[in-house]
Length: 284
Image (cartoon, rainbow, N blue to C red):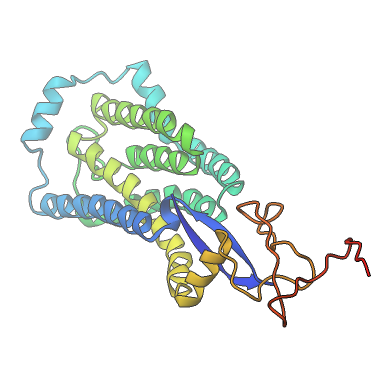
């Protein structure tokens, strides 16, 4: 966690705002880089499948390890997680959860799973034009796996810090289970499932990073010498002139008596004369 001074300062009081995750420049850059890497990997694989659409060695190995079972109930249960009903219901829940903590992230987490599915169905599959030998339909990348992976990532991002790890683990299990299910049902090749997972996760990360980028840029542009002075004032080193005259107390920055809880008396005019406290009894 890092702290930044949020301008402007009102009445000499500087407001501190914490930056976590994608609100920090490093967090935003790392999130964008991870998402772009996943999307780039899915795109490169798609270009390879345009030239060689038939199953490769990884697909052959996966098909041997995961034999076909078209009537497996558990597999049908997993692929149900990627249905349109589950997708729309999931993005609604994600939006409501994220709205309480970060409105920008709530919007990103709500639109990115839908965006991922649209990319798969309307752009990636027609361009790659890879067909599954059993089902006969377009297979790369898997839209079902992409939807589950995107929802799992979105849920992980909008959760509070202490819940992110367990929610992320559950999301990984759901994505892996759906990937195995589409292979067992012979809807997709194993590489189709991997491509769908990469596209789903990458879409959420890139969208979230891009929507947070304006806030990060504004924060970077707002930093400067003045921000440094305000930051030192906030942490207890109040510059002369920031305290109201005649109060005999430090300006409050969210806690009584200032952040450090200290009180200061400022002298004006004659350095040898102390200003009177309004409640002080002065003798003749």
